[in-house]
Length: 158
Length: 288
Image (cartoon, rainbow over all chains, first blue to last red; front, side, top):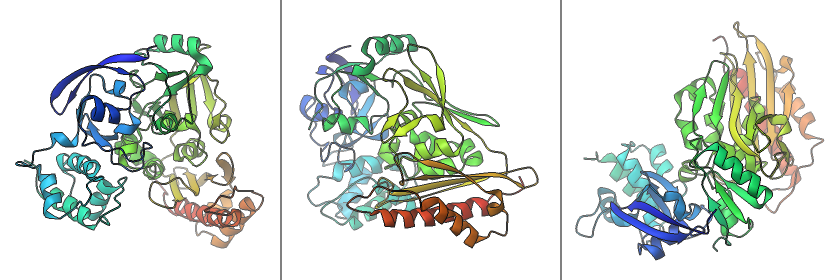
């Protein structure tokens, strides 16, 4: 039984090793220890979806994971998707469809959408709704987010 | 908020787990998917001295046999949804599991964690009762099997000891030709069920009704299981007979009230949910 642990993980393709308190949430580890503040913290209960990241390519709530639980795992955050010059196709679709306003919920939506994009999820209405399910947006009314996700899923992945 | 301080360990095998349970017993909380425990830790509704993480034990196997389905306690909800064998022989299970939270929650949440948490409105609690299930547990005193009807005591309380952990979950796979149905009323998709209902109609090789089970949650501190009179399940269905039976079931119940839904509304919702799932379960299925 320990109160802190050394963890080693891969974040957006880069190897990280750090000793952390065992009670540190993955969301706080990413933001404060690693300096990746794109992962947003909204509710710390798993409801809002803003903190969603990919663990081994699978969307999960980083506010409901302890940093020590990703020891040996592969983590992806919104920072790993693309750059301003080379947006990920999903980010480009969000841009085209004006699918963000304040941007607080956006990283969570993007990570969920990227997982679906990689899986070749079809752009059917029910499949698109499943991608959006579990993410709250207070600004947009979701319409443009839905359009962006449908557009991105309709485009075959390379 | 952030969790209060605790000690942590993630045993890699069962003997290490048992040592931890022996040492920490009631002072530890066991962590499975974390989709219920982590919010409680984050809001400091739970402040255990220690957290024992079960995620390194590899308890995630799904074994489908002709009459028994066995799930390791750490099987994620999403894995159940993706399993074609479960979809084929136990379609009521993915039907219900689909209502659990949201995709990211289902990617991490587990069947064992849900059962141990014993939320009375949880889909897995209902399914365990509906499908004649049982849990196999592990503790310093050895393994034991607890049938569904002996597992849930009251709100968020099982009969498990503080140092006892669910290791596997078993369900009876009904005869081919049997059919199940599930229905839940919730404020929004993925929200906690206000009322939920599951029905199973078991059929023999000629399509004859062998028996019927109904489970209702939202009307009591634990889900309630009933045997359905076979005559009500014979086709053509006597829908007014079903309604009368549903009414007789619900009338003596005293559902909790809350700010959103009063007791009378819960009773009405329960009655119509019961009729709905019984019709669906009795009209589906047939000769295998």
